[in-house]
Length: 218
Image (cartoon, rainbow, N blue to C red):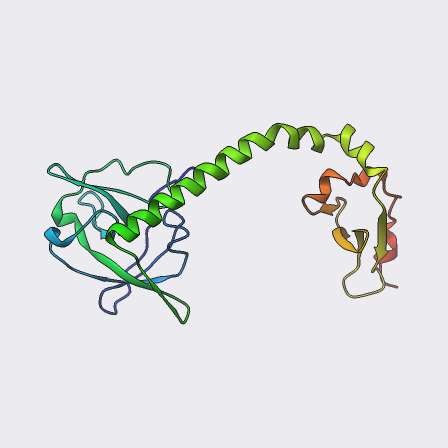
């Protein structure tokens, strides 16, 4: 998964709080979380802490990432949801503080630091790797099954039901696989919207022609 640029967020003028925007710290932090942080000496920081970074090259921006190593050369960080370690080595002056909690709506979320935080970081890295490997393994058979030829053949064994809502405010035709809603054709559109994974089984080309003139009002 490509981590993209670091998460950036504007300062809220309400003490040591920041509004988080971005994906690099998912699922630990999410968009619009309000994070609380405190300033502590460098000697009290540990691998696994989530910190607020103010790079010298971009002093107007803030980045929230996790410490993954501390050495005499400096501090290295990475977003929990990023594939790559951040390219910079931080100076003590570039660290504004350690994140102690976050507010998600009215719910306060504890921020794990030190060894517990690092263990959660490692666990998430393993989940990401496992998910990526699983996707790679199923991509080829999924593409084969999704091909038009296989889809047409499979569709013969699936019971489909079209329901016309043209007389209602919705003005659409819906398709069901048994009792399960699988997609729709909305007024004014010429393309069926088939929900995954039903697009593997359903080929809209096999549907009867829909006359959209019936949508027109008198």
